Image 1 (cartoon, rainbow, N blue to C red):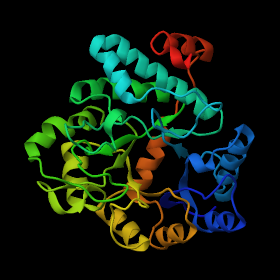
Image 2 (tube, one colour):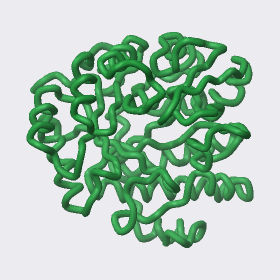
Image 3 (spheres, rainbow, N blue to C red):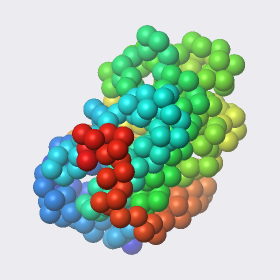
Image 4 (cartoon, rainbow, N blue to C red):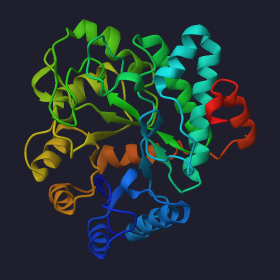
Length: 339
C-alpha cells in the first residue's frame, strides 16, 4: 500500500471519475471530505464513500463532512433533519445551562447516527470561535455564544456526543476566528487585538478542550503574534500559540486551501502549510488541477504528524447503546421542529 500523504481531498461530483480514481490511487491522501455537491441519495453516498476508501486501500480512512446545523449542514432532508445552529443551543443554555448542554450533546449524538448511516466518520464540529460585535457573519449564528463559557460547555458536549456515536470531532477554527471582520472564503482578515485579549477571550475554548483529537486552523492574521502570516501558514502561531500556549498536541489540519484568504498558487500553499507545522493540508472544492498542485508539494505523513494521526483514530469509540428513537424524542423536547 502506498504511504499516505499529508492531505485531505474532496471530489468533483457524486461519483468518482476515472481521472480521480487514478489520482487518489497514486497520490494516496490520508482522508477525504464531502460537500453538498457530492450528496445525492443514500446508496449513492455510501457507494462514493466506499469508492474513496477503495482507491487508497484503507477501509478505515476517515471521511469528513461539515455537519453543524443551521446554514452549515451538508446532509439535508430526507437524508438528515434540518438542525438548529449553534446559536440556538447557546440561547437555550442562557436560560438553562443544563438543558443547553444536554441539547448540544443530543444533537451531536444525532449527527453521529446520521453520518455513520452513510459511512462518514468525522464531523468538522464543534465551532469554538467566540465572535465579537461587528465581526463578519461568516461565523455569526454558528457560534454557541459571545463569551467563552457557553462555547466551552456546549463545545465539550457536542464533541462528547459525536464521540459517543463513533464519529470524530474537529474543533475549529483554532486559535479563534471570532474577531475576523472579513470572510476568509473571499479575503484574508487581520485581527489587531492584544495578545492578552486573545488569550482571555479567543484562545480559552481551545485551551479548555485541547485534549480533543483534531483541530482546524483559522486563515486569520493575528498582528500581535505574526503580522505577516495567517495562522495556517505561521510557524510562530502554530508553535507558540496552538502547540504551547493552548497546549493542543492533536492532529492539526488547515482550513480549506481553495478559499481566497491564502495567497500563492496551490503548490506554494501546500508547502507553506506543512512548513509552518500543520499536519494535514485540506483541499475541498474537488477541482482536479488544484488538487494536483496540492499533491505536488505534499509529503508523506510521518514523524509526529503520523503519531498524531494514529492517536486521533484511537478516539473512535464503539457506539454507545443509545436508541436513536429515544435520542430524537428527547431532543424534540428542546427543538420540536426536528422531532
